[in-house]
Length: 465
Image: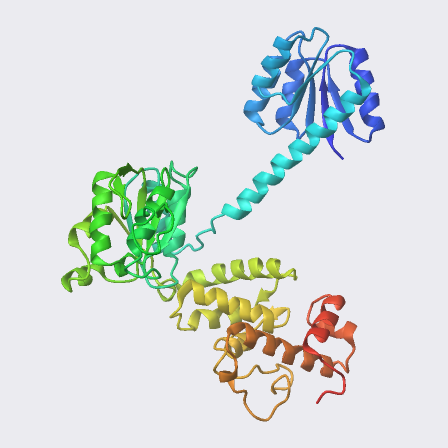
């Protein structure tokens, strides 16, 4: 139910508007002056405000301006017995949704109220969606190394200093770059990512600087490069250590002069870009080997941030694992599972060669293949999907009670393995519960309709051996 505030110094108008709006099932409050109205707006969440323009104590235009300064998304409909075009224009300039003359026409009033509320809902939904789309994952951890990184980001982000982020694959270098952008004065602009290792050396210059039509055989039209796309924002050059020497020379020039030239073009184009680079290589060794330019290294490494491997900050594993667990369970639409203390300690003891990326994949695997509480045995069993077949806690046998181990070479992808393991697990639980679907659904903590869908998906039958 929408909540509407009426601000008007005429009792008759307030009563009439209240009666009309309450008849339409709106929740209504009213006050007789602008000062009290502004106080209510500051302390409550209203979906719409109907505000008179000419009032004692505080003019309606003042209420509008001050209210929108505090809550810029709340729609205002201004009402006045002395309506003129000039007044309506002024109200619109100050942010009012619409203007209605007294006495208000019933149909016009209700249509305007409905449209204003719909517009308010759209504004709110758009902001929520934008937050979801652009949301940067939190940098989880309380270890000294992570605390130092967070502090460095807070200090460096508001500047335009170039940053070089180092660390092993999967350690979170991209996350550091995104937080540098998010907390910078450029956060309203784009952050454009270029994976230098994934682009062939002959195409990297076109990717970064763009090209003109006809500049080479396949250049059938003009293309805007990543530097131009990132104008006013941040350019994230991931795996910069894999960039060719010829491209390095052009990047160095772009950083020195803030100008680029498209491939096949002659015109210099001004660019306003902050560059954040990342690498898993030792660039000083690459310089010694003649694979990386020393002058570019110094240009990029105004600020150096090293992201430690997960093995170097194992005390952060419980927080990260539980966060991933909640996130993944929400994505799958299932109740959040819990880790036992033994499971957490076992996770901490594992050799994390794949760092954060590996941990997330393992948590997803555990969520799919474990019961409501993820145990130490679950972690040992499912930590390495190619090491052993899943084992039942109750019987010590595999879900299908097979006497031979599974040939894991048969699976072309992790998704195929997940489907196989899920099928075997559900089949085992159904057989254990004598094919009582309701009991099995409760046992594995999913909806009965969801379980029926799984049974149909995998073609499970009661007489299947």
